[in-house]
Length: 218
Image (cartoon, one colour):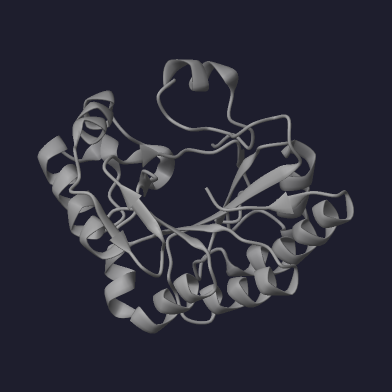
């Protein structure tokens, strides 16, 4: 059971997390979780480039280590990078010390000011710990960022591409029916999601581009 549109009650309960951006501008924020993965991430990059779209990739540290060339392609194409833990840990089932250590292990690779909890599952105690971290200011010439604190990023619209029982068309409809100005949308550049992603992503890009939207990084 999962919700396509993040409810207002959840946003109220976690007010310090970012769920969506400004509703006044026709900008959409596509995000991709769980990569980088050969072929799948490559497909995403090729599709984004065809529509002159930028996105944010929340990467698993272990996948960065396994596929450094794919990770480099994401950065070289001008997309933003986010931390998604080193081992895709679920916060609700992980003690705080182990969870934070795993995030910092990924942080050493991503050097990003963005973090998304896998499964969207994170304890309030873990949120407090992350928001109290003061990271050493540093920059990456490729990412062109400088930061001192992590921003925890959630989402406004969940495509459902990870659901093997969901049809590709339904995945596409999930996005176009629930997206609005400033929506943060979740896709997954993973093998599990690829059938639905490959169908929905180019159609989502075409649909919203024709309506005058642009696609930006977080």
